Amino acid sequence: MRAHSITAVAAVSLLALSCASASAQDYTDRPFIDATLVQSQARALELADLRLTLAETFPGETDDDFLEQIESLQGDFARFGGTLAAADADLAQSLEAALQDVAEAVESGEDAAEDIAEARTLLGEAYDVVIDPAIQDTAAFKGAVLTDLLLGEPGVAEGYEEAGEEPWAFSMGWAALQRVKELWGEVSAQADETHRSDGDEMIATIDPLFPNGEPPERFVGNPEEAEASAQRFVGIIETVVSADLYPGRDHAALAAHLAELTTPACEVYASGDEVVADETIYAVAGLYTDNLAELTNLFAPETAEEVSDLLASLVEVEDEDEGGAAGEGAEQSDETAGDDDDDAASLAPAESCEALAEQLRQVGMILGG
Image 1: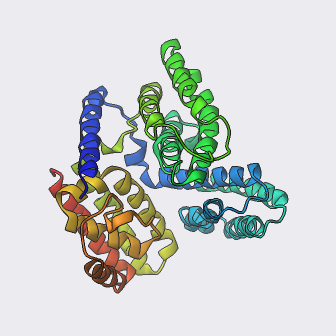
Image 2: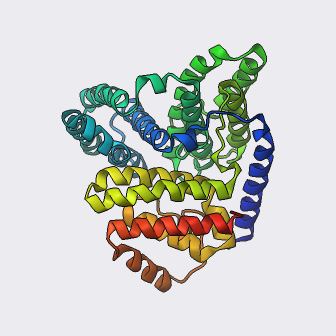
């Protein structure tokens, strides 16, 4: 493992410890823990909307990296499509087709305006079917969505950080920031003057980093420049909405939660309803990657690799460099990594799921459980 990776993990750990001290406020709402699947579905719905914004803002763009962002609409759908189909099969079919139409029109260089408008309308309807509008209207839910937009990938902080290597991630960050402004306008209505001013200050700090959605021809900024303000902003939001928005405060507890969440999904896989079960694994993968992968890889690279392989055998996860646990690289030969991938892929989904739950329990013990 590279030295700077270890330093990064140590920094993440220190951040988590500092955040843990803030948990003394004993927030009663924990949206990422108590509503993990709902927040994962919301994240996917929000991402799909950001991609539609990108397609709308840059008509005729055919850059390969841009097309990858638009093609990911189908991956977004997979994170909530099973729930949507169970509730409204016709809407699910129509939305999936509309998203595919957008991707195909954009790829071919055709005018996608009508396809985008239709997809956005259907996406709004799907949002209300998948997630109860009453839940959407809660402060905790909005706070969690804001957190994902600010710190998730692709989002504001990550989009800016990756601008040098993935220019269209920058554009996704810009789109996410526009949504952040909209949601903060709703959330800040309940904030006191100090917190409202502090949040506005964070937006004012981040805004100049994204003068428009156009990806930079040559990125010359500090890749980490948006991160500090985004982190501070989430801390402000957490206080305003009175909800715990840092699920990684207790690494062992989070790993145990993910194992517990995975276990019933295994029964769903066994019943043959893989599309619905996948949604839970996507949610698990998101929280694991964001909060536990690098730390697990530091202390137990073999376990980290196993978790990574099992996740990839069940759902489509981002292929990180150097084969780590969806983090920065467990050091393993290509030949050995290939054997592990084959082993995981040879298992039936229910078996992979059960193995994943066991590995996540191991992660909990490794990280102090």
